Image 1 (cartoon, rainbow, N blue to C red):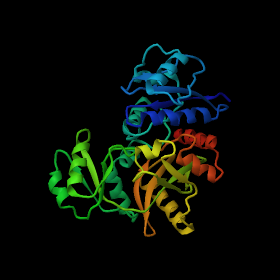
Image 2: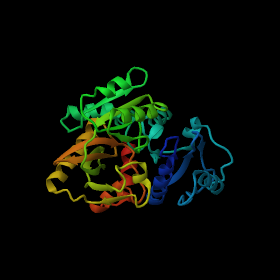
Image 3: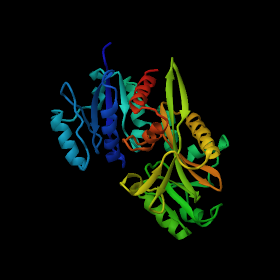
Image 4: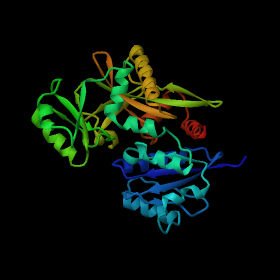
Length: 349
């Protein structure tokens, strides 16, 4: 049986560019080579596509390299002399695109819509689920509608709101947690203990973003839990993994805590007890379904006084060898090579 040709899209224009490079190195190394020929396609920070011209493309080890160093080596190794027009992607005969992107335009539905227009199937969720999950305000409304606990929240819009007035008269008490409604990976997020601190942080976010989510700060145990789908015939059987407890050494699980080695401790399975574990598995699966996710997702929670409060769902979660979903799959004896095969097979449904 001939191998299927898979495009691995990575990099991208979001703030999680370097994380995508690390994730995709693991994806490239792990995908079943007996079934798939993998062509890594690098999307640089300006949005240009760099497509290998060699018969057997290679993915350089990104460890310890800057974005510039990696891109230079990637292009040299794969004999790429110039960027390619993204509209020509459909002419390369790809059976499916494996999305190794994170955040921003890679995770919010835009690249998914582009691939749909090109007629190229892709792994992960579709346009609507990707956009809804990235929109924390609308995702919270959906979570509330099915009875999943959500800390009190409101949204500010730069062109419609009077931020100072709203922040001085919140319907819930300080401290609060503030983040871009459409942000990812805890970039430009922070805690505010007073209206003055909140106004300063919101003004900072409004420099680059139009919408800000303000939410009552809930303190407790931080956990995250993945959902995978296994193809059974032409049906998708979704199941929850086991939770991971995250113990950041900083005040909260910010960008540095997530992606700096040693900045947080991750315990899988989380020592939260059987009852809470079952609740987390139930809630994560419900979040996955209500958003319309496909293939896989990962949902983050805070457990306070025995109640798991949902924070957000990620449709393209981190996928390095030590990321949370690979940890959780390993705890259940699920091989990531098999998971990637499932994702590709589901993309072709």
